[in-house]
Image (cartoon, rainbow, N blue to C red; front, side):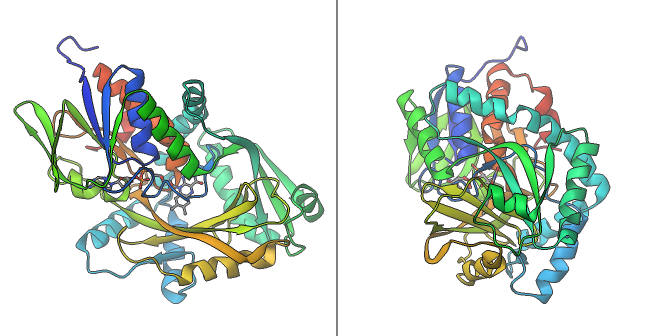
Length: 416
Ligand SMILES: Cc1cc2nc3c(=O)[nH]c(=O)nc-3n(C[C@H](O)[C@H](O)[C@H](O)COP(=O)(O)OP(=O)(O)OC[C@H]3O[C@@H](n4cnc5c(N)ncnc54)[C@H](O)[C@@H]3O)c2cc1C
């Protein structure tokens, strides 16, 4: 610990998604007194009904050249799984311009070296939370990517080859149509090829957030609900968070406000834009349980078992987290995958949900100190905040309590 560093004894976390709750939980591991404040309730953002894959193998940066090709298709087809919510919000234009600049192979490779280091530690951070008493139902299983035509697999296999080239181990098995159906009888005979991504994990994210919240409360943490914070300032050596209902004070503050984080970070030296990548999900009943998670890369839809139902998640709409969800999206997702599946009762659709992935424009999360002493950020995990949330908590808590930035966090510097 640097000689003159005084570790904070009270920390306020703004945002009670998977990332914020993991930060709170890990800070408690170091004996810190934590409060968490949310404008709504734990899990109210992207952390509630996402696909729930804890998949270090598939966790890769979003910006890459094919996003631009998808963007053009999105303009031509309202059913495209990647879309832009039209808006006069200048922050959207600023975010898109920065995202487009990052959509190069060179930038992707550079970011992937950052992900590789994080991905290697992600599962251990989950194991640590489990050992520490977070009562999660975490299942181990392979993710099966399914393709109606072998040529559709080229993009996915190329991406996995690039992941290997970046030094991350990947264990894949190519499966014939019969092998795919032998493993997962819900796959229809339209599917001609499967790629099995070995040894990943998955969970029901809403249950997991609730388990984290319970554990934080059991250990003495306070969770304040329905209190939107409008700004944070440093005043006379303490951090003050301003909300409509009053102020909250702490020695340090962590902004873990997901896709809304940009509003709170203005004026604190963070230049990388963070914006919403809105995704949709719903569940349907399956009379027989699914064997494990499925992924349909051509449709950009994942299907994750959830008790006697299965949850479908997908779509990437760049837009404000607060814009009204587009109901037609659920039908688009069904249309995109129904011919690939059998024995699924689509008439039982329920739990329709939209959540904003917190996207950083350069595809790398922002985790660490801001320009305001005592103010930290943990966010911008985009498509992979479930996978990387617990690790983010572990690393940031170490930085906050020791004053030393763990090497894995250096490239995530929010002031980059
Ligand atoms: C359809 C879909 C599928 C996904 N699938 C996966 C997956 O399989 N695996 C994976 O790893 N990731 C997945 N993700 C990504 C993952 O959901 C996110 O990266 C993760 O949930 C982000 O967590 P967070 O805590 O940073 O943000 P959030 O969960 O959005 O939490 C932010 C919280 O901050 C609160 N807040 C915001 N502003 C304020 C304010 N001013 N004052 C007080 N509180 C505030 C919000 O209410 C919210 O509760 C998916 C996302 C979507 C949408």
